[in-house]
Length: 304
Image (cartoon, rainbow, N blue to C red):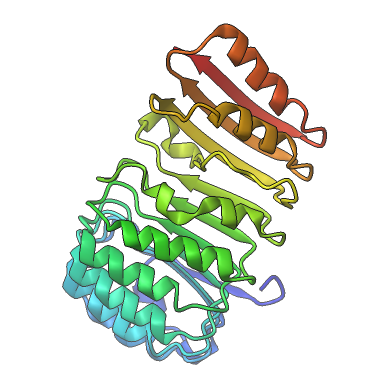
């Protein structure tokens, strides 16, 4: 993409008067614009038959479900897309809008990069089903980012399906998932994240299941206690928060395995153990410091 000329539009007027068939790398920023149910965006995008890299920032654009459907009707026609980056945060698109987006993603067979921001859209069970089904249909993905902060309850099976897809798709080398402040708890357990980390070609893993507003800007990562010693992870971001119901051998297994991630160069880590001792805290910290290649680390361990 670096060799291709990027065309950026900070509004609709200039985009509407542009040569649609000449766009290959296209960026349209409509953040805080009152787009609403405007169907012209979708119609114009449908004429961009040569676009390969598409970035749409529609944050707080009042799209809702109908506007999302019309937008997706246009994106579907962009058959050469290999990268789709779309920010639909704070648009109240609901499950209906996510279903339209899911159908759109399924129709784009060549996607290698997918970035979706669905924050604060009142997405519930059906929307979660549809977006996970769409993502798992993209077998050529190399980079996946799904930000679904501040939404409603999603099925546990969705996380099981998503985890299985990430674990088995050998093309993926970077995965970012953020479910900050959502209406579910410990759904990460269904993702089989230990198997995901075991993949030798996964370089970056960042998963956020936190509920702390202090951590939202950093997109921290949350994983279960088993990390295989042959992991090739270069970057790992963990946020484990307060933990009251930890199995007896959790800390020993977790920190011993973490110390064996010999390729790590970046680690962001925070955990709070409730009802433990200062000696246990010091032992946990010493295990982390055994990772010799770390260039940058942020480590916070607290016993409460």
